Length: 310
Image (cartoon, rainbow, N blue to C red):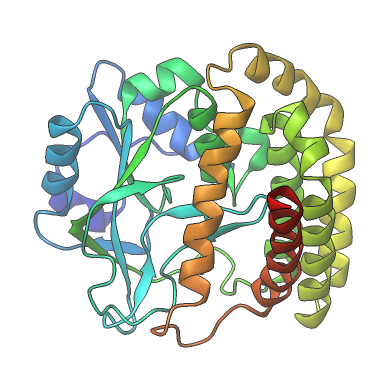
């Protein structure tokens, strides 16, 4: 056992042989927690404030309609700024940690639903994993929590943001930069796989323009960050894993409890939370990719709305 962990004894230390990825590590821990009511996942670059975990447990104890809860994450380097208040997803498939980069001015001081838990620090009911399974180990790292969130939503599970619970997140501890070529490769691969596995068929056809547009903008982002080859490798990796993803998709969709239109409504609400974050007056710097995405689809949605009203 590493020396720094001895101050937490007694605890069960489960060493893994080599780096087998975040998803595997999470799953080993979840497996060891059988018989418990809750599983709390915490990355090694997160430090909780006092009572953080108790606030999360209390929130889930008080409202049984939620299966997961997340704290307010603050930037390690400057806790005046937010690191995130839960993960949200675009209809086009991109996922974002809403709140990231915003000055914490009280705009997220009310609890409420979020699309998915950021597994850097998240409390889950063990019953969630019993229902939908654990993290997809083919994801290795990045977006494995968003994939889990999509599967959870398809089964009617919800995630709660609890602002009284606070933690500090360093971020980028795995590869040192969110723009690393390997980060782009894995993010590209995993966001494509998550769509293939989880989007209902009717939604894929309906949202095809957004899905294609987001990938085009994401490619542009990768080129801007000098990670073009990382994007290409990620896309090719995703293609090679399509047969495996389709097998998983068949099982996931056969067990889906939420109708396609309801899933679409949930995702529209999630995209709207991303839009409000992007347009926030407290943002230090807005993602350029979202400027293009919302610029195009706000205009298209406006035209569609006009035609329906005529």
